[in-house]
Image: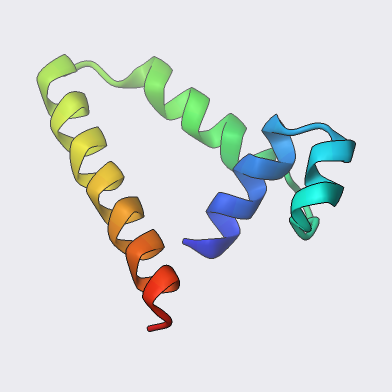
Length: 71
């Protein structure tokens, strides 16, 4: 998950912000965002996409809570 978060951050943020936040660069930073965009475009079942998105967001939240608490 860490690579995905860094990849998205590198894709979305400008160089000044990345430097200020000390976000490391990652190779192929556009691969993950482009793959996610493609996945969203071809998903046919809207309810399943919403359910999956909720599960993924809960996973991200748990990752952040674990990192904050030092686990």
